[in-house]
Length: 365
Image (cartoon, rainbow, N blue to C red; front, top):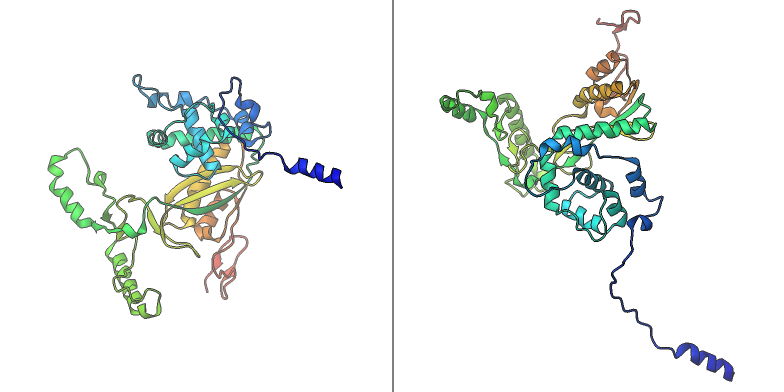
C-alpha cells in the first residue's frame, strides 16, 4: 500500500504543463513537401498548363506602369473560387491565404502576399467575354485529349443565378415614346448616330396590349387581396419586368421557380457530357425567358464545338421545361434524338385525326 501511494503521489504531483508558442523563422521550408501527393489542387496543378494565357492577354496591357496580376494567377484564383463556392473576391483572397494547397496551386509561397481583392475585381472587368470563352474552349479540348468526353450524349438544364441587386429597389421604367421624342429632338446634334443605337435600358418596351393585360392582372389581385397574405398592405402592386427595373443592374430580371421566392436573377443554361460529367457548354441569358427558347442556341453552339473536335452529338437529355414542338423539330432536323418529356397533359392521339406513317401528316376531320 505504501509503495502504491508513493507511485500515485509521483503521478499527480507534477507541475501543470503550459505550452508557450512563439513563431519561428524557418530556414528551410517548401510547400511541395507539405502538400500531399494525392491533394486535389496539387493534382490539378500538374494536369493543366495555362501559360498560353500570357500570349492571349498581351494586347490587353500597356508597356508602362506597375506590373499587374499574372493572368495565370487570376484564372487559377477564379477556378479556386468556383471549387470552394466563394463568390466574394475579399473572402476568396482570405481563404486562399490560409490554404497551403491553394497557395501551391497558384504558385505563391507562404511569405508572399496575395493580390488585393480589388485588383482581382478590376482584372475581371478588364478581360472581355471572348477571353473567357477561349479559355473554356481550350480546357474542353484538354478534357477531350484526356479521354474524359464521349460526345454522343449530353444533358441540359438551367438554374437561376441571383443578381447583385435587390427587388426592393425597383423603379418604374419611363415610357418609351418619351425617349423617342427626346432622341428626335437631339438628332440634329448627332447626325452620325441612328435612333436604335441610343437604346435606354430604362425605357418601357412593352406594347399597349401587354400593359393592358398587366393592368387587368393587377385589378384581379386587388379584388382577391383579402384572401392573400399581406392583405393589409394597400400599397402592394404588381412588379413586372415590362414596367420595373433595378437601376443598379438593369439587365437583372424578376423571376420565380416553384418553391423559391421572387428575386432578381439571371438565367444560366448548362450542358454536360454524360460520360464523366464534363461541362460542355454554359451561357447566361435574361431570367424572364423560358428554358425552351434557349435550347436551339445551346445545341447549335455545342454541335459546332464537338464537330471541331471530331465528335458527334446523337442524344440530348432535358426536362419538360425544354419541351415544345419547335425544339422537337429542331432536334429531328439535326438528327439528334431528344429525350425530353412532353410538357403538361400532352395527348399523342386526338380523336378524329388520322395519321399517315408514310408521309408523316395528320388529317384534320
